[in-house]
Length: 293
Image (cartoon, rainbow, N blue to C red; front, side, top):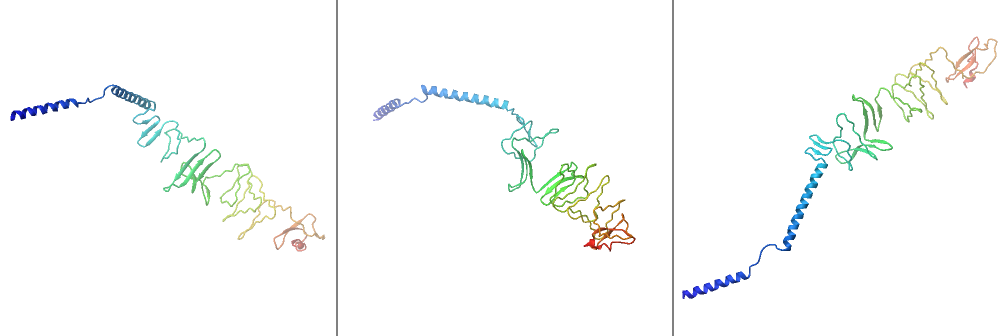
């Protein structure tokens, strides 16, 4: 009995080995597939070497270093550009300055605009330099000297000139549509000073007095209708060697034995009008009072 079982076991084992040998498959890549794989790996290595060579060439041409690229340097204080630079898009920066002993140039084929924005992204101050004009927009515009002295300021309510002297060199002078306030107005040496109001009146006012001087020439006051000199609390003094009133009207002439042919007296009417009257032994103003009418 045991011998039969052993023979049967050996027979079944041999059958299993025979069936295993019948179903064995080869594992791997052979033939044209293997050649294509090697070709693909070779192509990848070639591309890798070409990319590495191009990267090295770009780094060499662009002058990449540990401090920056080309004329661009990265420092502790920010970026530093050496030479001329061109920006194709808006530039946002906290501070722009040139190197020591060098000038800073801003050039553009159209215009250069510098804008200051607030936290709400609204433009509060803007400087626009174009081919036709230079425009500055803001609440206040100031020009100061190197010592910090205010030379010029402009805002909506007033314009202040802080310089010691304001010179107007135009042939037509300066035109002011409204009143001006200044302690002194004078012309250049050997030049005439003209204050003129072509269509309106000209008023000179001061709390402590108005002084008009012509040290080396004449002074003329010409008007179309009336010239008025008024002093409310003081007096008007005409102090000169000669005082001439050539255009005074003549009073009615009445020949009297006591009349002087070439002598006249100046008469004043109650309304302030002046006229001339033929002088006599006594005053003849009362006789010629008809000139006051």
